[in-house]
Amino acid sequence: MVTPLLQVTNLRKRFGAFTAVDDISFAMKPGEILGLLGPNGAGKTTTIHMLLGLITPTSGTIRMFGLDLNEHRETILSQVNFSSTYISMPQSLTVEENLWVVARLYGLAEVARRVDLVLEQLEIADLRHKVMRHLSSGQLTRVTLAKALLTEPKILFLDEPTASLDPDIAQKIRVLLKEVRRSSGVSILYTSHNMREMEEMSDRIIFLQRGRIVAEGTAREIVARFGQADLEEVFLKLARESRHET
Picture 1 (cartoon, rainbow, N blue to C red):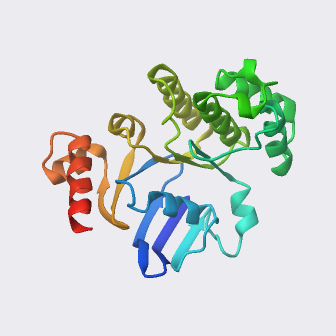
Picture 2 (picture 1 turned 120 degrees about the horizontal axis):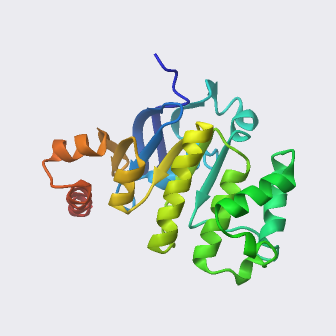
């Protein structure tokens, strides 16, 4: 039996009277791309923030690499990284300077080689001397992805990583991520509102609704369970149910 790289058990997060994440449990295997899907307010971002140690769970446990996050925070976080369309990096630094800062924080060796590699992978080598505040939203997205890949993480958390990219660049990013997974064995937790992207990228999907897991399996298994034509129809059905229950 394969030992999970990530194990979440009875995880719950309350903000006052509001329960954002409600007693969820799941695991991610080594080398797996696990999709985390759900409408706005379902608890996806809160879950990721707890996995990153940014907010403290109300209850439950998070284990990565067989270690408890509360007890081995630094050891665990040195082996993970995160990218999102909605995060910001220091705007007065250049692209290259930002990547060097990240590399130093992680204690990377051969920093120049690693920076050159990720800039080439993301096709942004021409931006290396450009100040961050002068970048477009799509360029910023690729820089945050470069930051995430730079450290060669064992677990990569990607929160809507292609949301601001044009279709051509988004497809290149998906191909790159699958190649990185193949070559390095990285495990990826992936969120997106693009249902085709979720079907293409995810080995397995966890579907959240109002903080609870309502479905888990491959895209095909989830579609069959809800008797819909495709994953987008499942998403619409559950999103509409959430609004009616509010």
